[in-house]
Structures are given as structure tokens and as C-alpha cells.
Image (cartoon, rainbow, N blue to C red; front, side, top):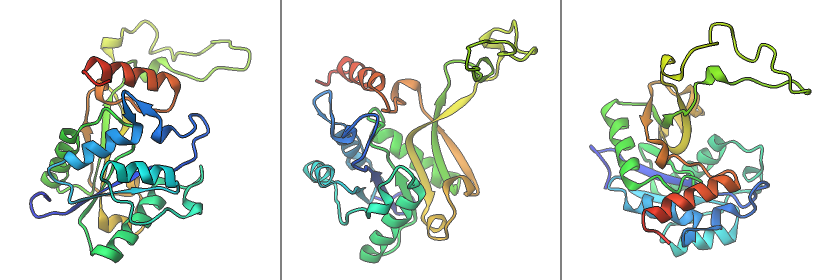
Length: 237
């Protein structure tokens, strides 16, 4: 394991509460719990030295263990609220892990809501982090429509000035390709987390590009349906 002499700790943050999709992290998707897809991808990585799940839910912890992923400690209640940041969860997980096992070089965040991300994506992002001497890496994918075609709406739905004048009449091909975060892979130097620098204040942050078909982020029933359809077309059931 490891890559170019650097050590990598995979962290899967999976809290129990979800208002929009209750128990979504263990909800069945194409024949296995949602969490299971990320657990399997993480364990198949060539470079992750260890993988853990950070959760406040015993049900989620049991699913993680069933898939062979460690749950060496439970997440405190104050880090399992809607207001708790991913950074605070990672800082807690890193400090707890290093107290038991010693320091690591990088933390790799793998959201369980990205079931189409594979071990190959994880490993390619790790290779990018090391080869660029990156402080961090974030996975992105291209957006389908130019953001210039987007705006807010007034209460009555009127669209006066919805598009800026310089945008009107342009075809989508005339806009530069833009990207969005897809939540599939995040990598940060462990020292940045220890020193309190969150992801977006990390020096030398690089993008790892992924295609849209591997970038579904489960946040709604439509996302579940889309992911299920893609997985079944790939032979999973």
C-alpha cells in the first residue's frame, strides 16, 4: 500500500441523520447498501493504507463492519448535526486515528453518497496529489449547461433581466467549459487538517476531473433512480 512513500488514510463520513432521504447511507441501491459501494471501492484501492468510517449510528457502523471497513470509534453527537462541518469531522477522525496508530501523510475523504466512484478514481486522485506535491485534491466534473444561463427568480416568477445582455443569443458551445464539485474524492495533507486549515484554505489545491456518469451525488430520489439505472446497466442488480 501507500504511494511514493506517502501514507493515505481513507475516511468515509456517514452520519445517521438525513432529513431529505432518511437512512440514505444504508438504503439499498442495486443490491447493496449505499455505503457498501464506497466501502468496496476504498478497500480495492491500491494506495489507501487504512480505511475507516466516521459515524454516530450503530446501524451504519454495523454495515461498515459487514463490508470489512473499520469503525474504531463513534462520532460524538455534536459532530453529527446538520451544522457540523466536514472539516470538523475529519479533524476528529484524524486525531483519534493518529492517537491509536501514529501519523499519516494524507487524508482521503470518500463520501458514501458517490456510489459510482471506483477504486481507479481514488488511485488516480492520489497519484495526482503526490505528483503535483499538492496540498489537496478535489474531484470535479463538467457542468451540463453554462452557469451564465442560470439565475434566481422573483416570487411572482417574472424573468425580466434573467439573462445578462452579453449572454443573450449565445450558443452553449460559445461558453468556456466549466466544472462543479462532485463530492466523490477529496484529499488533504494531514498536516493542514492538524493545523486547522480547512480544504478551501489549502495551498496548492488541484482538480481531479471525472466524467458525469461517475459523478452522481445522492441527495434526492431522482439521484437514487439515476444511480440505480446506471449500475443496473453495468450489470449490477
